[in-house]
Image 1 (cartoon, rainbow, N blue to C red):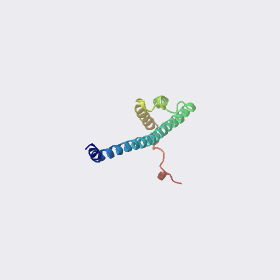
Image 2 (image 1 turned 60 degrees about the vertical axis):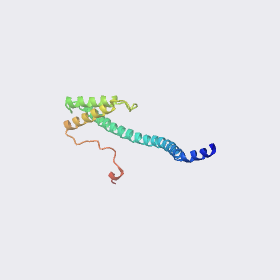
Image 3 (image 1 turned 135 degrees about the horizontal axis):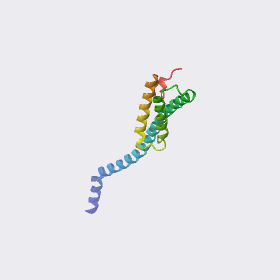
Image 4 (image 1 turned 120 degrees about the vertical axis):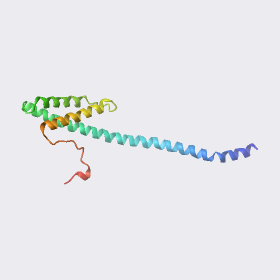
Length: 137
């Protein structure tokens, strides 16, 4: 009777066995795919952040050069905001993206940029890297 029970037990547990095998395969595949997708998203996000920081750094460098050539060109308030932007850029934890201050610093940079832009009366804004469809020759 034991051999007959073993035969029927394997038939009755067939669904559970397939379920467990499918779960293990799916889990393994999910781990591999998740790491790959996470890497891609991280690279994209890191690139976009670096690009935006670079844009602000470029603006600050140009404005700082103008101040060196003609210190009276901008008001003291604008110069103060330019210096604060420079400090925020230097303080940005580029090598520590999980730092909790990342969002606060980026928001402060955007705010300072808008203040300077409004004070100078220029229509300059960061639009991100142009997408292939946006590029015209």
